[in-house]
Amino acid sequence: MTDDGHVPGTSTPAHLRERYAERRDRIRTEMGGERNLARIRSRGRSTARERLDALLDKGSFLEVGTFAASAHRDLREETPGDGLIGGFGEIDGRGVAVAADDVSVRQATSADTNQKKFHRVLSAAIRQRTPMVFLAERGGGRIPDIVEAEGFMRQALPDTVSPQLLRHREIPLVTVVLGDSYGQAAMIATMSDFVVQVRGTTFALTSERLAGAPAVGGGAVADFGSAEWNLHTTGRIDAIAEDEEEALALVRTFLSFLPQSAHDRAEELAGPRRGADEAFSRVLPDRSRRAYDGHDLLRALFDEGEYLELRQGLGRSAITAVGRIGGVSVGVVGSQPMAQAGALTPEAVEKIVRLLVLCEAYNLPVVFAVDTPGFAVGMQAEEDRLIQRAVLLMQAVAMLTTPVFCVVTRKAYGLAFALLGGSARTSRAVLSWPTAEIGFMDPTAAAGILFAQELRDLHGEDRLAALRTRAAEVGRDFTPDGPAAVMLVDEIIDPADTARWLDLLIRRERSGPVLPVADRPLLTWPGAW
Amino acid sequence: MHEIRSDMVASVWTVAVSVGDAVRADDELVVLESMKMEIPVVAGRDGVVTEVRVEPGLAVGAGDVLVVLD
Image (cartoon, rainbow over all chains, first blue to last red):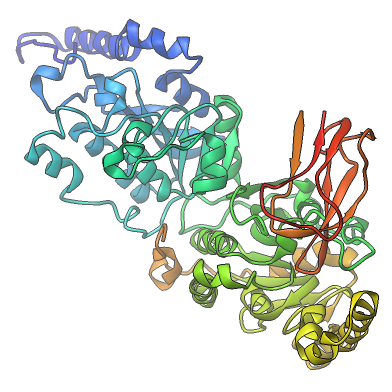
């Protein structure tokens, strides 16, 4: 029962305390009723309370809104918590706020009270300067609440919106899709810093039935709402978890690399400093034209080879990840030569901007590790609005106040190099490996254009030989020697010293208190575009 | 039956296998060329090559099948 029904002043304090304790227990045990709980179990899923239990440190949870229910009095009995469980707890000893959809109550559909509860908890988290974790499993808007005009307006056009959701990033917001989720869940995920989806769940803005209806354009997608679809096609998630346990572990990992809020720096782990490491010298293949897995470099770069990759499925020619170097949390933008030779696509550019905003918000230094032949230009790129994305990146980079470092490992061509920390104005240090190739364009492509006349008259092997000769001529001046001679490159380093260098720079370049959030415009960068 | 596909627009540079070859997960089947780079495509699983659908010089698109394993 959500309404005790007692008459105030007619019971002793001890009696009332006991009654409320009983009610609390009942609400927490029965939740949305045995039938609905059984349905959850039959699907192999956990209840919202079990999930919070698994996520939070034992005994740390204090619940908010246990006795909340539907704004419709006649529905109070059947809507404990109004389908959302909120409160405060700890993860690995650090404070967090949480909100978990209780799908046993009216499919956890969005309604007045649970919206209020969500925003109440989020506002508290911002004031308290702790991260917030949202465990999602919900339908869309609740019927009957949204059916009438005033119901719809009250829900969809609330009087106040949290500054966090208006893009004033102040605390890490994490969304974990643990069951089928639609509507508001998609919105909150879009505004989140980290999103995980469990394989086998469906996650989309609208249900497949609505999305595929002829009235809205129709059509069908084979794996609509699937984790794979969201990773690779919609790009709305960072990672897929095989099950709930893994999803919650990923949340813990993500939070472990971040500070509690935009006002802090992440905790620095004590431990050995990074020294010389031959692993770096094994990353590049012998042939400069040969692709390799960009993750090899990240494994050498991050402490213990451990890191969390973000937006894995989209813009694969770049890799964005967070981890630690010398115990200090950093964000890294790497190249992925295996995907389109590491050429920057619009999606890759968007993904990089996302990482820069995350690092700026949570005071992580940024390391660009560059091996790219440039932007993926062409007819399609023009139509895919590549240059618009490139300008977005340029502007985001210009707004960074967190320290930026650049390591050129191999190719660094064109505008892409400028936008990946190549400018000495952007980066506190530009380090170059001996294998760096720096120029306005890939030499073979450049030779093809500069000597087009000559090559047009040749064929087959002769043409290839001439192209190679001309490319070598053009590329002869693409070594890092020229830039190093005029201090456009700070140092040409032994690759084995890469981590040793970054360990020193990251530590020493990080001085003074964190800048006020008001002085960091990138924190208000749009959450999506 | 497993279809090994290209995940990018590229041309086929070299083909390292023939029908009937037994391959291991990290064996290279084909090397693609994209943006002047050689990009190896590995088997990803143990198996036997049942079809080779490409030859050097062929242009392929994202999703095109290169090799089929049993």
